[in-house]
Length: 271
Ligand code: SAM
Image (cartoon, rainbow, N blue to C red):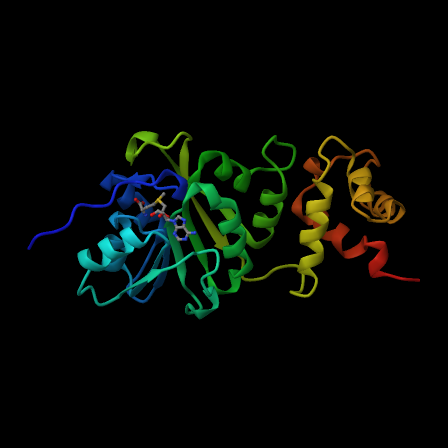
């Protein structure tokens, strides 16, 4: 049978195709899939991962935004019974239509890796784990600990919902075309129990973003500039035995949780 040539890469869609089968094996090992698992793949591209995912799991849904690649995959994977190829944008695809327990395995398009990550984390109750290739610099932010240069909004919010680990780094030589940045595979295991109720979680997100909004300022001043009551923030810092001049980048996730429970936006509490 004649097979068509794979479409050429479009840079603006983050098309850096994996070409190293050894990396595919390592991603699959990190994903720990079984024949009962449903998998979501974002951006199957030319299908190097997709094929192996279909062999090692029960069902694969692969969402590709590029119609050329979608058509290429439809032809190449015609007759694979456990694969659903979707032509669409992963930023708008209804993730709630996927079965609960779906494992996400993807070599993400880097130009939207952070918003995609936040979107996946917003649907965390559906995904027990996410195994993602992304920029090494984003991987470092996901695993960063308080006090490190990389620690910020992404670190706190991801580590609140998941245990995060960098599985391995991937050289730019493993892709065609070569990406301009280093890559790494991360594993995010979603926590079964979280400290806040779902109703209180938006307050944590809002507070963490406000805390890091002005990185050169103290935590209290950054919160004040974002509309929080500085006196109540100072009161919480006192009870935590923290200096009033502390900066957001030194606070562990547990202390952000305490702050979000006790420091309210003034307009939330009209007195
Ligand atoms: N999985 C393939 C591999 O490992 O070789 C391709 C990975 S490539 C880094 C990212 C893929 O995501 C490309 O195929 C690109 O067309 C696709 N993509 C880009 N933006 C997307 C979006 N918003 N929704 C779904 N797919 C997208």
